Figure 1 (cartoon, one colour):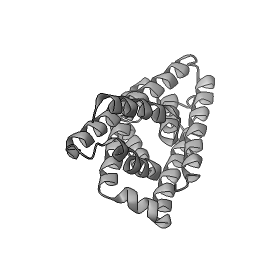
Figure 2 (figure 1 turned 90 degrees about the vertical axis):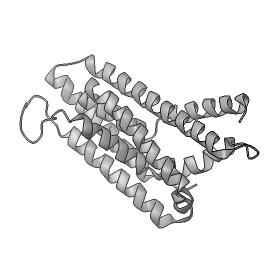
Figure 3 (figure 1 turned 180 degrees about the vertical axis):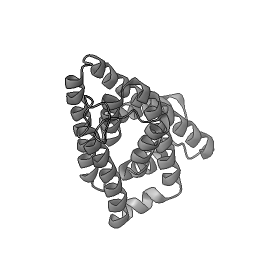
Length: 207
């Protein structure tokens, strides 16, 4: 792979990742409800989930998802249902209560990481996209494994950077208001964003 090809790949990847999709909406919604402490675990979780999606695409799952409407639907609805669950949980939270089942309790770093990983890894579009996108930039007359590793490492790094960027933007918006009434509104905005991500995931169609 020559430098020009890599730069084209780099630009195209950044553009694609900056377009808000279910994963970005999940990161924003979670960051709005949980704050700065969630930003890095969410970004790492998105990176891990993207790695799982990349491995799945290389293993042939991307081709299978593109060919099987039933399997695509299973992945799609599983991810959508989980996002809606997280959104409803955040929407119903009452930060003024302090305790009780409806209070947003700070989730652990592990929980944020696993949530982001699960949502990203179960996005069928991501798996199909990686399966179709990466090979376009691999020179067939050169060793393919080093090229594939370079492209995948690049995608992983950019995915986490973009996720962290959106998370910190959401945290900055959250910190503008800190009283319980405003935080309740922020929680509901975050919850609505998560539910919207679930609806967006449910609306995904196979290419």
